[in-house]
Length: 459
Image (cartoon, rainbow, N blue to C red):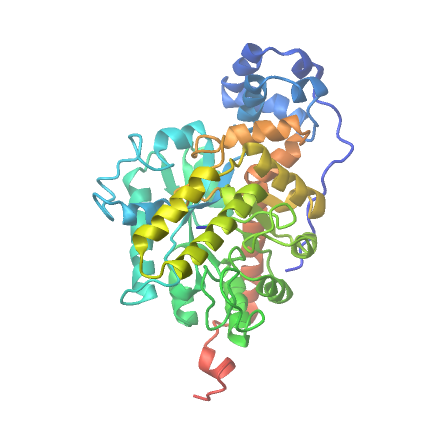
């Protein structure tokens, strides 16, 4: 909404794709794509590090799509962030009703089973998001409800979804033709300053936690709020250490650059950004600065590029900023006059249509992160069902192959594409599991509190 680990080298001197691919028609490639997995896998293994031949790069979209669909039969596409559980909670007619929101039919949102299949999704982190400024009985209760919704969705369609808690679980689900389904918490406010709550959420299946959402916490600054701590507090550092011990991925989407830097200093495992893009391409607070991208090879982490129009297109971001400034100005000019404010904003939008973000904009972010951090440190985190506007060409979960086809046109190798699709984030998850197994042998569960660490109150 949304460690010390050396990166895998990429093959910069990769051989061209086979001569066969240079001359294959779309129909011929389609035959290769949709034959049995055994028949389809062998040629791809031979050319696993190949850079697409110039003829393929210049080929039609149909041919490039057939090519990437074949790759998707060999490696799982793992998306880092989908807000379907919150969309279910907020459904106007039947809120929280998993039975009524039938994924076997076309939904009003961006996610259903038919479109997941067309998108060839093999693994999904389902976001169990809760707002950082929610007015309710408590963050933890709402978080439990969101985990319950997500688990009920997964259980309702056992032929489609398979619960996953490890990288190996995702691969097993993919091999069985199912979507390995993990849970990702969005916002450390859900733990209510309690490491015990953090451990309980891990035991319920959460495999990453975004340290903040849009609101600065008692122990971490958010990108979308005023900073209070200049990064992580001592308790915030303890949260990161305990996540390492558990094997829960530290997600740095939504946090301030100072928190990103502090987390990279503290963590023993690779980090992720479950749904962020590159600030050098689109200068908004939610994106990742180059100074942080440059540190990812040493850490081993992954930025999972998101499809939020205002995060991938500078024109869209500038338009949104201008509209916000206009609304603020109008509110001051016509205080307590909602009708005048609405009409002024509507007139401005009429003469200033919203620019369109395109699939090429998303690819520009992927190219940039690949240049700065390396191809081993990039992934996909669409943020579907957590956004109201979409990128042209990436309107729903069926469109991932179209993005990969755009990257084929830009010369991405098979190894780079498979890393982006999911191999990179599965490597990160595997490494976090290894770190956890080691740390659990030498460090017990932390019992330290925010009062002890930050408020200097002794028990």
